[in-house]
Image: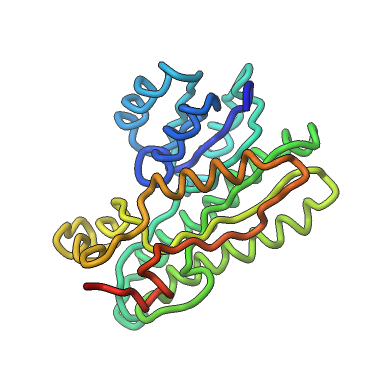
Amino acid sequence: MHNTTALITGATSGIGMATARYFAKNGINLVICGRRQEKLDALTVELEKLVEVHALNFDVRERDKVQDAINSLTGKFSHIDILINNAGNAHGLDTFQEASLDDFDAMLDINVKGLLYVTKALLPQMMERKSGHIINIGSTAGKEVYPKGNVYCASKHAVDAINQGMRLDLNGHNIRVGAIHPGMVETGFSEVRFKGNKEKADKVYQGFMPLKAEDIADIIYFVVTRPYHVNIADLVVMCTDQASSTVVNKN
């Protein structure tokens, strides 16, 4: 992967950060994106000992800022070989009738529209070169619907559909498109979902061995290092104790 550059959204925590670290250890140059400048700065300092790193501070929900950030890339960082559409979140775990419209907006704006904005901003250079790899991070929530999942599940079903549609439309342009759909991964994800309630978030992962962010990073690296004629189009991954979104073996 020498002279390869990857752009990762949501790189300041969870799967995004684990993937940035995994890529850096394996010599992939990085454009790391996130909303928290101090976290971007710390990660840049950590990873630039291994590879060349450029940080972009923007919110994927803000279409103009996404475009401006991508347009600001120059030199080797303007040549993005791999896009990891990782930025995403869940807000609340409420019944549809009790859920907040603000939570609905946040999930659709980040999980769906943010993915569209970043991809559309980056795609022209891939099409011009007839080369590139787009990986969309979905969820098992994009494959089934569970109680109180309503709009979060809808947003991840949209990622699944967009991934399939993108792959169909880009066929013939020599650009690989695929999605990875993780099950329960122990990150700060549940803390965001439960509005910072750490006690509630911790209970989600008690009594069994969930996936770690590093497990997904390892899988992402496997996917991007296949021979170029191989495209892993759709991959669902759960921990051994998880059989579905609602069936988990807890001791």
